[in-house]
Structures are given as structure tokens and as C-alpha cells.
Length: 66
Image (cartoon, rainbow, N blue to C red; front, side, top):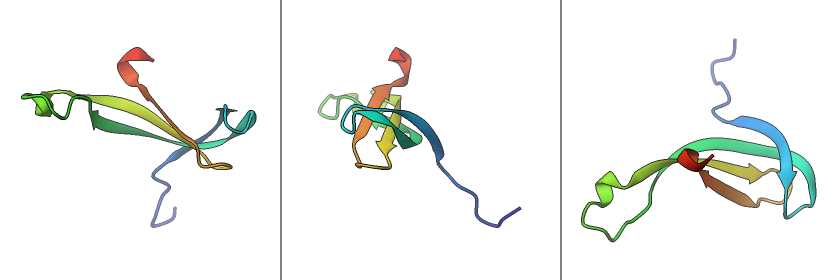
């Protein structure tokens, strides 16, 4: 076992920008949806963020809508 492990999940999925199946780095991030609202601290949701390792295109999808 190595001292440092990969923190990201890499998966193969379709990239609209490349027009083909490519390797993507996938993470889950907590994002604030309504920064200007009075209760912005309570407006945070988990998002699945995928970045194409070929072209760098990043897409995000709200996990509650997945």
C-alpha cells in the first residue's frame, strides 16, 4: 500500500465536447446554490463534478436530480 492514495475517482464516460468516450476525473462537491440569499449557508447541495482528462471540459450535476 502506498503512502499517498488517489483522492479522485476516474471513470470512462461520454464527453460532449470531444464527441466520444473519454476518461473523466469525478468528484463530489458541496456547492452554494443561492449566494445572495439571506440564508445562503443553508442553500448548499452536493454536486457530481466530472472533468474530461482529454479536453478539460467540466460538467456538474446536482446529486438530488441525478
